[in-house]
Image (tube, rainbow over all chains, first blue to last red; front, side, top):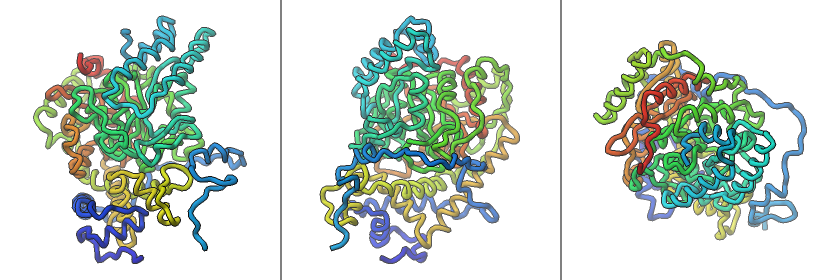
Length: 105
Length: 481
């Protein structure tokens, strides 16, 4: 699958881009919903495109709202995972493992 | 029963005027009578009554905890051991959490009784509670109107007086906006004040747990119990937790310097503007000094938020793959189709839309233009606030541009929905604490006043709210009264 190229920047969300995005995000969108989705995504891109004109020269990106050192917990080995309890919510397990469709013949 | 607030209920239990069982039964009765509001996804009646009995036993032995016997509703975003935790999504309709969120754990430890899990927008993505897999929640002031979102069930339940308090989460306004639209108090603490462990993640650098109450003092009592560092959440802060309630009651502070950003009031409609300036007059009479300030990048808040939040959401929600927990499609023939079909069947339209926008913003060729740029704008917005807090103690504005809108009115227009958070998103981007308190009505529907503080200054937000509520009665007005 191709990457999304920068030449699409600012272009409308056409079916080709939506197809690539759904591939990347492991989603499928019914064909009947594509036109409405495309229109909505175009409007959202217009809205977020407003940041383009913001005066951010010399501004550092802010990934976290607080300027503090992350406290780390003690590096102590603990038994805190209960496999049976954690697998209780999976519909498909066998011998303590999760099962998935075959990936190798 | 005449108890109206958390503090009154706690006092009555302490004096043994009422038992935990009696108060729990009373609220369960009210919840059932208001079923048509659709506030709850799961009602935990049996476990609530069993717990109430245990608490009554403890009370009879004079073993009283800070919140002994207080009924509470938990937003269904918080993991609750042995109880369905759906996050408002078909994806987690079958999920029984194997552990408690730290917020739930702390509230249990403090003696609260969980009444149930409240309805919410799917994965907290929405401003109207209409994106829930379990249907829309109604606003108790008028059932044709939305309660706001994403914590709509929690807000509606407290406004309808079917729960004395509830928890919520706020990523872009999801506590303050529904509090405003339902006419109650909604407190979003500083990012890191309250642990996010066990709170299903939407946008991890913005999400924060908080509270709904009818009264500022109630929020002060509860905030102390849920705050503090949690070794299970390395982004939770080690900053000391004050006794907010005692500060509200005992501190003499009244002469706050309060800033009103021009950008928050310039485009208001007359009704909201009039209510807002009536509130400003009350604060001046209390002794506050009012200053006009500027937060000049406010207009970019929603745009930056709509890049940062979906980007983080697309990453966080990648964990839902149909393998370990959550919805698993029956159609899957290969591993790829198991992922795709499970996610496509499990997520609703708005969640899918946000995942796609986030995936786009993080894609090769777009990252710098959208995600990196949005993070720089986030810094601009945060700097606006830092500069403002050099001049003022607190910042004041309306919580929302208008009263609640009608159910269905904005569902086909995501932009109009996003813009209802215009005054709330900036504080999430900057990680600041803020609270919405009732400030009046427009055509019978409540309006909210937003008070924003500097990082970890919840105590002054609560103090000012407490002073305001001593002079007004908006917060004691009830729907249908």
